[in-house]
Length: 180
Image (tube, rainbow, N blue to C red; front, side, top):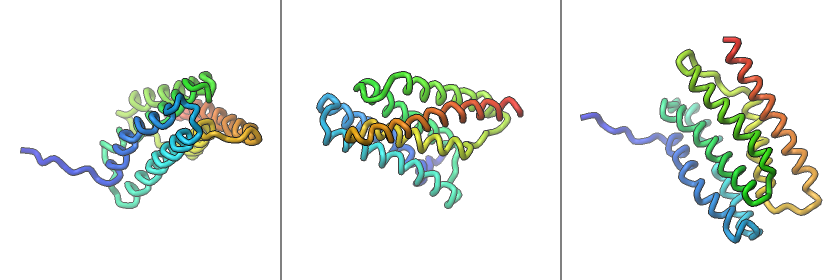
């Protein structure tokens, strides 16, 4: 009989991220999405989930606990978090659907490409990709967070950078794969 291994801490954090998403969505939609307190709670929950992504990667590298399970599930958790936040914000009219479309199209295309090339090797996330994730997560977060009108322009500029990085890093990823 094969012994079932206990999940390590990084994989447990990844599982936590996925399990927490329904609570994030619940908080976002509570009160029809118009309740300021619940939107702040939703922002905080998404923020905690995002921090756990940073933490699980750091712990996995520092403790040499990188697993095949984690390599597969971590990007899925990242995409699920982005999809939950963007689709939820768009459904509530907080974020334009075309932004959600750009983000999710890029993520699905790159994920499919990763699975296509997985037999020849993994192409690691670039610095631009990590920066893209930072701007996407905070950009969407700033649409979920009920900000005063005076902060709409900085929020929109931040989102503009996220959109640019999403497109540019997606194109770069395809270029890197095609060069191999």
